[in-house]
Each structure stands twice: as C-alpha cells, then as structure tokens.
Image 1 (cartoon, rainbow over the protein chains, first blue to last red):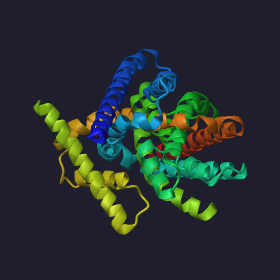
Image 2: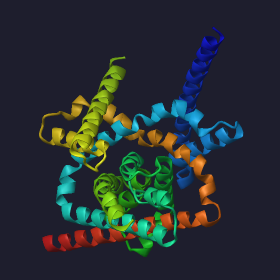
Image 3: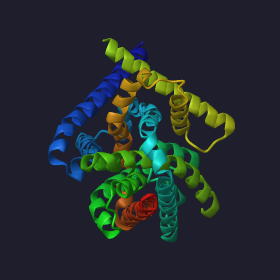
Length: 240
Length: 123
C-alpha cells in the first residue's frame, strides 16, 4: 500500500517538474525575444541567453539535466516537425534558388566539404577521442539535423548539439570579420556563408542584417543539411 | 479556438511526414535523417501541387518563427560537458571556430565569384 502511494507521489512530482520546466523555458524565451530585438547583440540571441539562464538556474538549484528534460523533452519533441517545416522557405524561394542554382549549390557543397573535413582532420590530428570527433563532424548544420546525423554516426547527441551551438554562435559573432577578410559584399555570398557555417543561429543573425541575406542563408542551411548528411557518414567511413 | 486547432492539425501533419521519413529511412537504410526526408517529401508535395501552401501555412510558419525554442533543451545539455572544455579541451573550441570561419569564408566567396561571373555573362 505504502509503495503504491510512494509511486503515485513520485509520478505526481515528475508531472509537476515537467510542467514547470516547460513553462519556465517558454516564459524565459518569450522574455528574451523583445530584449534581443532591442539590443541585437550575439549574446542576447535566444539560443545563447535562454540556455545560459536556465543552465545557471539548474546549477544554482542543483537540478540535474535529466530532471529538467522530464519537461524539456516535450519541447525537443517539436524539433523533427520543425525540420520538415523548412520545406516552406525552400518552396517559397524556389524561383530565386533556380536563378542562382549553380553558385548556391557549388558554394554550399564546398562549404559543407570544408566544414566536415577541417573539423574531422583537426580533431584527429590533435588526438581527440572518437566520440568527440564524431560530435564535431556535423557541427555546421542545424541542430535537429545534426542530431539525426549524430544518431547515424553513433556519436553523443548532447555533445553534437554543443558543437552545433558553438558553430552557430561563434559564426554569428565573427561574421563581420569574415565578410571583410574574404571580401563578401553581396547578400548572396554572405547568406551562403552564414547558412553553411552557422545554420539557424547564423540565419537569425542574417535576417537581422538584411532580409535577402537571411533568405539565402535559410536556403543554404537547408541544402547544407542535406549535403552534410551525405558527406558526414562518408568521410567518417573513409578517414576515421 | 479554431485557429489553435488548425495550427495543431498542421503540426500533426508535419509530424506525420516526419514519421513517414523515419520509416523510409529504416526500410531503405538511408543515412539521411528521417526529418530531412520528410522535408524533401513536403517540398515535392508542394511543388507538384498535391499539397496547397494554405493547408499548412499557419502551423508551419509558427514552428519556423520559433525554431530556436526547440533547440534550447538540447543546448542546455551543454551543462553536462563543461568539463570537456577545460585545459586541453579549449582546443576543441578553437578548432570549431576556425572550421566555422573557413566554411563561411570559402563557401561564401565561391558563391559570390560564380554569381558575379553569371551576372557579367548576362550583361
């Protein structure tokens, strides 16, 4: 009888924790959105700011990630459908895409190749573990796709997500410098660079700068996701 | 209320495409993620006119507008890996930034060169 009660209490607790985690995440996210609109710093981007705030909370309250994920998994659940949703910008920008199909495809393919190989070879040369190398390989593509690629490669999914975030945030921060260094002047080149290197986080930063650059970036992010999901397993098979 | 229901229906439809993508991946042992297969399917359905944009625009736009939100839980997983970036692990951070810079610079420069060549040809 007592164990039944204890089990019931544990279940109720889990449901409560889950609801709190979901509500808190969405609330902090909605709070950060207008702040980012005003300040426009790479550090106020929701992916950076919201995650940092929640991590801080979890550390202060000594709550393990696993407990947070009782609720967090329900938000994560929407990642897959969100990737399917990316067909929409692809469809809407199809005419522009067709017009510049060669520059876009060649640029994104070379970008994807550079991303997969430089990550793989640098990490291998420095003698890092296989698990770490597998997590670095898909870093240039949007998280849900990187996670799916990570599953295919057999790497750690959380670790994969960590490198994706680093690629996204660092890319957004260094983009003005890279544009200058590589003399990227038009929205096409800039958008291709941002989407290929820094996926959705870079696309958001591009959108803030210039709508056309943002659209190109979202196209590049989608094409890059497809190409990297071919390249990543191939190069891992060949060189790891 | 009907608006909310419509959005939920749209999201369920996207989810159904995700499941179809997953099934196709398993049957044919594809290494492309099921979500990307679902995305390509949806693109084809729209392009071939089998699906109308307005049948799923609201839910889809909502997901796209808040794309970042869905990455947050998995990003928070970072907290379990903080140790990794101490000491020698800092090199991993440097590798990632260098590789990202190269992708952005090289990919962007190639596109821009090719586009410029195309434009001068057109003139």
